[in-house]
Length: 353
Image 1 (cartoon, helix red, strand yellow):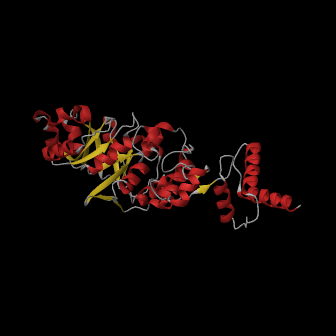
Image 2 (spheres, one colour; image 1 turned 90 degrees about the vertical axis):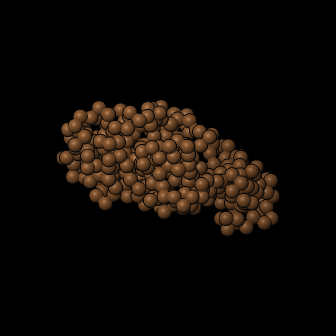
Image 3 (cartoon, one colour; image 1 turned 90 degrees about the horizontal axis):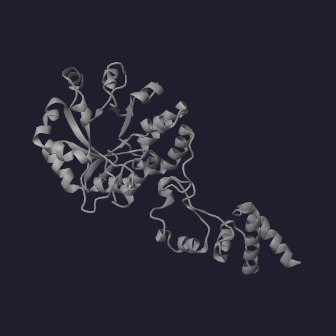
C-alpha cells in the first residue's frame, strides 16, 4: 500500500514496461532492475507486464508483485511456462466472455482484474452479464477508456460497482484530452481502490505515475509510504533505460521546472516559494536553480552574488545589471556562476580605475 486517503488504503499499479516495449525497439536491459526497484521504493505496489515484456526481458526481480496482462488467448498458455509468480491476471471483459471451458479452467485458481471500457459498464452491471463473475475469481474491476474529468465525481459509479460485484475498483484513465492525471487523482479520492498509470505516462496515453502520486500527497493530503525523493533518480534511470530524454518542462520530472530567471519569479521565491510552486522541490529530491541572464533584475543578480559569497557593496547595481544583460545577449544564453564571478571582478576593476 503506497497511499492512504481519508483513512483508506490505495494501491498504485505501474504499467510502464509494456508501454516501453511497444515504443522502443532497443532498451538497456541492465537498467530494468534498478528501474523496477526504484518504482517500488517511491510507492508502487504492483508492476504490470505482459508476454511481450517477458519475451524481451529474461531476468525480472523476483521480490516484486506482478500483474500479468492477457493481450491474446495464447498468452494464457504461456502462463504455465513462466517461472514468475503473478499476484493478479488482467483480462479484458470482451475477451473473457469468449473463453471456453478449457481456458476458464486454466484461470480458475487465479485472481483476476477484469478490464472494462467505461462505455460498456451499463452492460456489465446488467444481470445477464454477471455470469463471468461466477466463472472467474474476479478481485477487481478496472475501468478503462475514461477520457474526461467528471465534475459530479466518481463516487456513485465506484460504489455501484463495489456493491454489485463485491470487488475492488481500479481506474486506468486515458490521456486523450490531457486529463488522465486529474481523473486518477479524483477517482482515488472518490473511492477507487487502485490507480493504474505509467511513469512519464502522458507519452503513452496514460496518467503519469509521478504526477498521480505527488498529486495525492499535495492536493489530497494523502499519506504516502514511498520515498518521493527518489523520483529524480528514477527519471534519470528511465532515460538511461529507454534512451529517450524527458521533456525539460514535464511536470514533476522535467529538469528545468525549478529553474527561474526573471525578476518576478526571483522576488516570489524570496518572499514565499509557494507563490508559484505547488510543492517544495526537495520533496522529490530536486532543488531550485536561479539563472542569471538578460531577463534578470537587479535583485536577482545581487541575490546570486550573495549566494556566491561575493561582497557587492560599493558597485553601481544598475550599471552592473546592464553589463550582465549585454554579455547574456552576446552569448545567447544564461550566465554561468563562474562567468558571473569573472564579469563582477572585471566590472569592479574597471570601476576602480
